[in-house]
Amino acid sequence: MSEPRPPHPDIARILVPEEELQRRIRELAQEISRDYAGRTPMLIGVLKGCVLFLSDLMKSLELDCCVDFICLASYSGTSSSGVVRMLLDLRESAQGRDVIVIEDIVDTGLTIAYLLQNLKTRGPRSVEVCTLLDKPDCRKVAISPKYAGFRIPNEFVVGFGLDYVERYRNLPYIGVLKPSAIRKDN
Ligand code: IMP
Image (cartoon, rainbow, N blue to C red; front, side):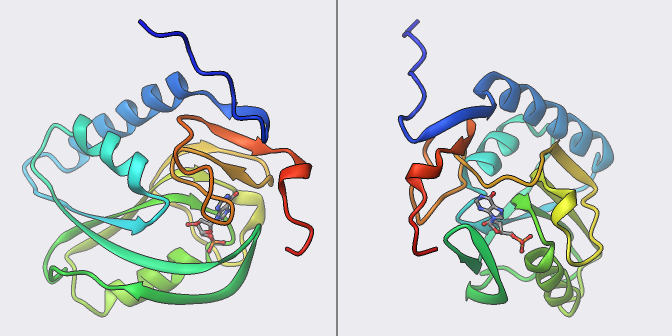
């Protein structure tokens, strides 16, 4: 076994360590496997933040599933612009499918509210949200994801798929950035 890597020098503290992420993702997968037994849900990953969460979650699901991706943008630096844009659309039809939207984090809720409204026009059989992180104190719209890994306080976090200006997505834990790592122009 290799020694654990020391935290990245820009990380002030680790909020959710790797082992805790993995344990909770297995639990979420068990819950989803029970709830969707006998069905083949369509997982819709919201790029780019979903990538590590989605791949670990899928591996632990004990049912058949399909996967597709959508890319939405609303963030600039450490704050949400409030305007959601679709950069990449689904390749598959969601018509009649049991859709589970896989998100990295629900913060203001604006991104997921936009996506849910958009998906409803495509005639899915059902739509639920599964998010790794939930920041309920930051909501601007009332959204409560059916599956949520961790409730976290109102802090800007990175790692395990989440970025700050496209960096830190590859960290295997969720961490809080040092103020010195945040550009003053944001
Ligand atoms: P919302 O529309 O405010 O709910 O934000 C959703 C998107 O903003 C997420 O999918 C993330 O890409 C991004 N985001 C929100 N909070 C954070 C954070 O603390 N770190 C990194 N990205 C975040």
